Amino acid sequence: MAITGRSAAPPPPTAGEEADAVLQTGFDALERVTVDAMINERGPYRFVVDTGANRSVLSTELAQSLGLAADGQAVVHGIAGMLPSPVTRCRTSRTPEQFLI
Image (tube, rainbow, N blue to C red; front, top):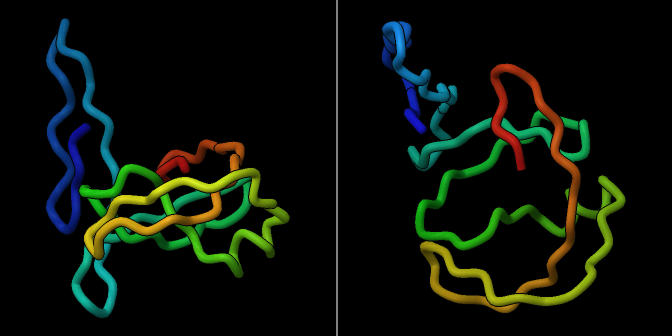
């Protein structure tokens, strides 16, 4: 997937070429790459892109406000190391400019 930030959109694909997905990104106060994400058709919520993570992570407070109950535990790998964490499942929703969790 092609990821774009502050640059111009890529040119359209030529005949017979498959189009890449384009994802609008931003930066937080610490200059980490962020994306807006929809969770269970609500949001958007700002997420930090952690390419070393094996799962998407959200705060306990956001999970509770969305009515997402923990249904197990798993080790989450990320930039800060490995940490056991509650896990849940959520539905994704699709909007043209937003990343899907």
